[in-house]
Image 1 (cartoon, each protein chain N blue to C red):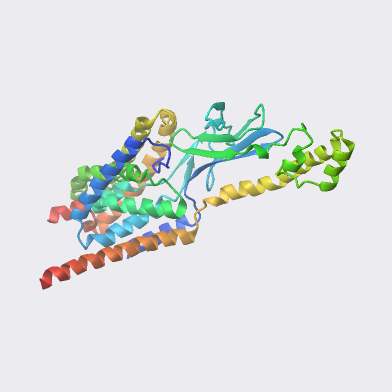
Image 2: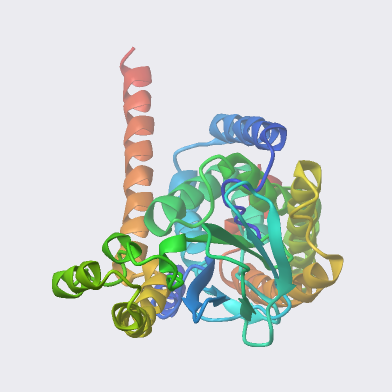
Length: 200
Length: 206
């Protein structure tokens, strides 16, 4: 009986906690790759090693997180990147940044229709075709819109990364139920063997 | 830490860990009898729940294992208890890795089992307070054992993930102390109330 009570206390203690998955969150701010490493449910490692690689696993940057677990680096050009965080005791986390998330440099005007960050404005692009010169306005608008969207979306991405692996009481109770279910099956199997042995 | 995810260890280490874990399970199944199942299930559920309690420590974080307590109460049945809890943690929380199940089971369960076998007889013979002390030491050593096995697995795999000794010490020492205290108090309580719970005490009667 006391065991049961102790056990129930432990269950309730676990409701306010999380499995300590180690994760890394990265985003683009003004062309910098920035973000932080964290343990789901709380805790940021300081002095964790951050390695940023390109798609060929070449190491482009190696640094450490500061006291708040934050890192920042400006790549020479937009590219598909992989961010690896290593807490030094076996905890490792990775995340990817695709090149589309970088603000597009105002190079060619044709890129407006290809860029996924802002919906192409058909009025402006046809205006561009008739004038024939690279007008500043559509690209500036696109960049502003892109930055505004990134600003609004970033808290969402952060919150999602943090919430993704949070443990829920339902999951804990489900796991415990499963364990007892397996125990029940095992006991049933044993008792059947006992019955079979005795009737033989 | 003790729950190594996929993609960190090399194939030989994973296969070796799987084989050793399977051997541990086979040994446990042979020794299992019906009356042991409820105990095993409860401890498996306790381990499952308790390793969700996360305590941030410096650059990393730790979670209780209670492997020594399990070893002291159910002996070799700790291996299946840990394995099932690890599988459920993986399925429900994405905690740990599929390929590393064997290695993780060995790392967590075996130090607890071995140290409980060593300390069990002494604990069963002692007064509750002394038993608690010995159990606390046993638990601390089990944590050291788990840390050593985790480091060994990482070192044998590759150099990229070798944990720095400094960080290991920083995180494992608080865990040793915490586990030692919890296990010590738990065993002292058990010895006062229901000594037959401990595997060492049961063996003595047989």
